[in-house]
Image 1: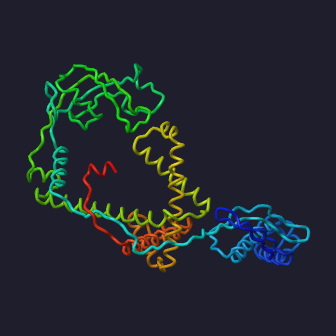
Image 2 (image 1 turned 180 degrees about the horizontal axis):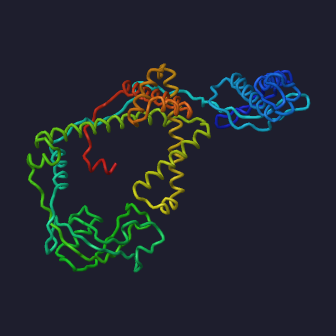
Length: 444
């Protein structure tokens, strides 16, 4: 077999493959023999059909099977000839049977990228010390109290801490904000909106201007939006709100005692609830610490690495990210037309993240090879059994589905990548630092 390889960009190696006439004829004879033993033709007994009848009657099927076999064989031999790891084959072009019985075609081998791994042991990371303060527990308990609060309707006037049920409409530069040609969400107008009279409710400075109002009273409220406001088109703008107070509700919080604890978690005392809150918060912070550690390690490994990536993998991962972002937006109630308006931004973000994900995966896979980290068949069996139990499906049915979709390779790779990250975290050089105040975290 005559194989010519030529390096191309983006981890591609062009391949021109010529299969000699002897190999073509030998493969054809093998296929015809298979048809002879299995084909059924009216008027002939099985196995007694003349070769000429088979070759004429099943000419297209024979040629299609021959083409597929020769392409598979040619690509396999081309992959063996290529020095780099071949991870896929691009579409086949110009597949041709020639009068001299030779067969030629062109394709491109997709290879794993070549790069030099950076030092991956003793990666420096800084992690916040995990701890839960009494103030944090108290704050969580206060939130729980509010969940079980009762509300009493009053005549007013509105005071700090009350809840106002309002209708409002906004105008921008004399025009209804609802008619703006950009997305404004619920900022434009609303009916029956609950707003707590404190500085953090709705928009900064909005609720405080309602203090002193009574039911059925109306008022104009002016809000100047900050330069870092979420909606770019509204930054630095003045919004004028026509507000009508429909009702006023005062919140009555329950006593913080064992009776409330019983409502929160039946069978638990207040002290046990505090302990449970502390354990949950500590677990959440441990997870955040692990996530921070992973992000710092991956950033350290990839920030200075630059190498070509297989474009078909980048495109596939980009599409996966787009699908995830759109699905998440729909779950959060974002309208389809808004998603369409933001499609360019979504595509740009997905493309950047997709390329980063593919790059990171190749780095982790290379580290796994260096450290002989892999998933065994027993690991795969245990994972499949767990997946079947979680989904309530029979193991045999799940095994068939995974086999049909090549899902076992994905499971093996996922386990290997997970263990590689465990290895990197266990070999990192960790410096504990004091936790930042919440305000500092928001600024950063």
